[in-house]
Image 1 (tube, rainbow, N blue to C red):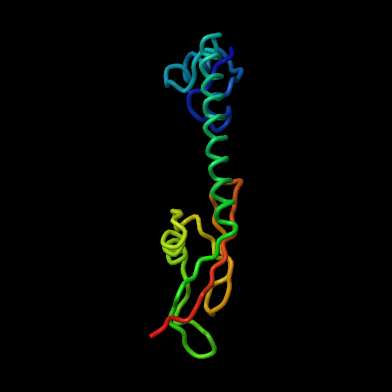
Image 2 (spheres, one colour):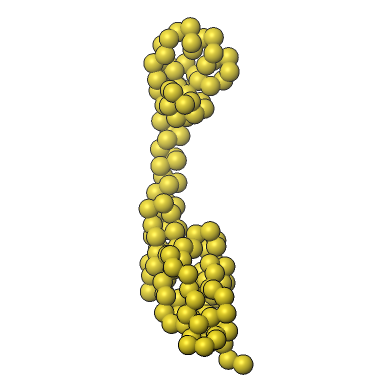
Amino acid sequence: MKVVLTKDHDKLGMNGSVVDVNEGYARNFLLPNQMAQVATPSVLKHYDERKKAIAKKEAAILVRAQELAQKIEGLSVTIAERVGEEGKLYGTVTSKEVVQALAEQAKIEVDKKQVDIRTAIRHIGEHEAHIKLHPKVVAALKVQVVAQEG
């Protein structure tokens, strides 16, 4: 019996998948627990339209992420920190500070969880941070750390 899964199932597949199962399994477990629907032409059409709508949304999100990545790629943000001897910072520059600098200097809002600083920023100078905007899109941002005056 062909059914369309309405919930993710460990062994059968993901939501929206069309699978062939034993009639007893479908009738006694999947259908009563609302984990699947019988694969009629109208149900298949509904899930096909839903997949197309989801794909369209994903494509739009990807395009927006790529546009934002292009804006970020050419940018450089400057962060002023207290400095000790030999240009060493009192502490490190965190992703939170990078997000604040990006918002203030470039008017671009990102979440601090999206910012990846591969090596800790502990010295003045130019460093690089990576911003993960989408699973397929990562932008590199130049972070210029300067000595705070005063």
